[in-house]
Length: 448
Image (cartoon, rainbow, N blue to C red; front, top):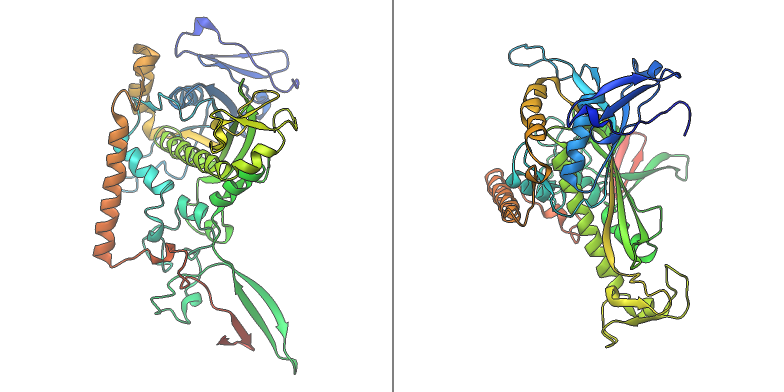
């Protein structure tokens, strides 16, 4: 390891919560806390940048809890744009901030929830319906002055390029602004042209919205080892001009042959610009774990559709050309039942892999520190680990999450009826979202 970084094993004398700082001969700052080794940058840089912290846990609530304790013990105090109450003028303490990496070995395994979750299973169901199912994708702004949302994660992931109008100037809408069938704009390729006679103009060719998750799934089905299965949420022309640009920036998935049975595990990395570790991170992690589970199901279905070709091909684990045999022996089994005759691996059984969650700014707001100490820190002091997690199945939480999804769908339906809104733009057969080809002559536009 580089001499600019150092680690130290968990000091049992520090107790379940306590931590302390040491310096070594190189002047490095070492954070010692209950969750094991934490790597921090050299002492000389601490005044100007957040600490770089890494935690690992088997399950989501375990890793989340450790991330918050690490931020509490090793975070840097720093001001934010939200330290003053806009209504009362109250000045809150600075936040605790760090750059955090969470590694969760089994993100979709039980237990999945923490008892200190701010909100509850119903709210998690609402969030999953929004992020994975996209029930609010059609709530995006139609004009810059609208009070609707500037984006949704689902919209950016499943229909990137659609309704990107949150921050464009009003002049964009001058032509056809009152056309209810074309209330938003999309992406377009622009090409300068010179017509016969020297007239100059531009041709605009619309770019169809892209379902990035579907593209990822297709790549993983055909080449699970690909490094190109990515999805992005960022759109700088808009995001740099709004007050709440996406926190989630990037998703990366890759398949690895893993385990004694050689199963195909889909690992997921997510990168976040900024995270409220205390109030938002558990919702984000749950939403991404649901998305990972959905990707795994779809990759498995894609492999099942190719079962005959896969059975005749090479084993992705050992490279053997001996072919595969079906466990059932009926010749009609899904890909998950194919077994290599050489290494006996279940190479086309798809399972969720490791989830790695990276945040550039992972923080606990100063206004929340008191509640955080009284809630999570006290829970760690007084409860055993098994009493701090919620098992969705054992506690009947799964039903509450489904109720949350159903309530969210009903609320969206009522609001749409009230506002006269439809979501016809999500119909893949609909063409009304497309930007027409336009040719501009010396400042005048003609629709083609």
